Length: 132
Image: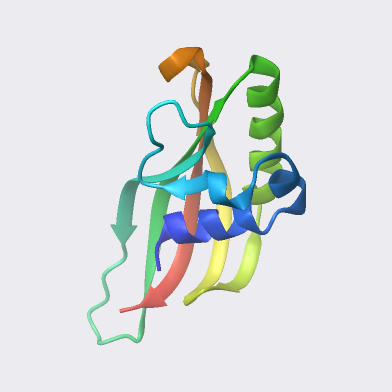
């Protein structure tokens, strides 16, 4: 389990977001050329090391969520829904991640994507405990 899994789970469980963007359009890794959707990627990860053998390791991961939309209006709406689904979340468990907290960590610029699509990214800081 990692921060990408946590954010992907939050996005896919948001009824407001999946009403506008099908859950299948929320992907990790990459979006195929010209495909509209929401892309979730890891930017950086810090594991807090312990001296004793622990069952769980605390990690903080910076995760970027990029929307690729057909119109600027769709991009703006998607960004609001993405922030609403993830910002300020405190969860006991998602998958095998425990003690989760999610904070916003910056919004990127508006850019023109492939095929004259509209893109923007929202970063999140995801802290969680996961099996060592």
